[in-house]
Image (cartoon, rainbow, N blue to C red; front, side, top):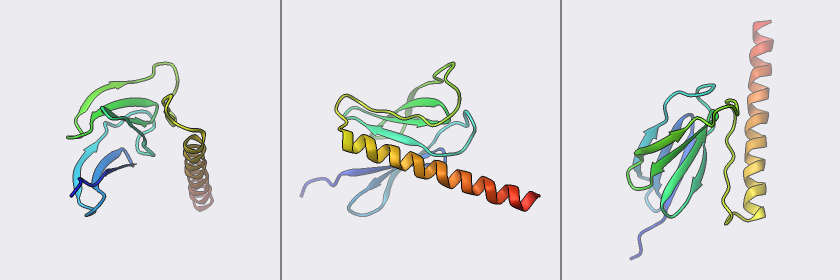
Length: 120
């Protein structure tokens, strides 16, 4: 029986590798607090390395263990979403990624409005 694909999930400074057939965690990695702290984690999966972007930082992780191999603070670019692509990403995938980031920004704006209304 072939090995099921691994599902990689990025959320709230965490990356989780999940067995797609069983739903069991294979590993979890918590990214260091950087940029504006917790928030969305964008992922780019390549055959060799898993790349993660969070709070204006870029991380490379070992796909098998989740070990952080290196990080780049993307100096001078601020601490915001990190959107990644490769020359192999098609336009449909790029649009889907942008829609996801737009939905995240919408949710954060609504959460901020609710918090502001509660404080005022």
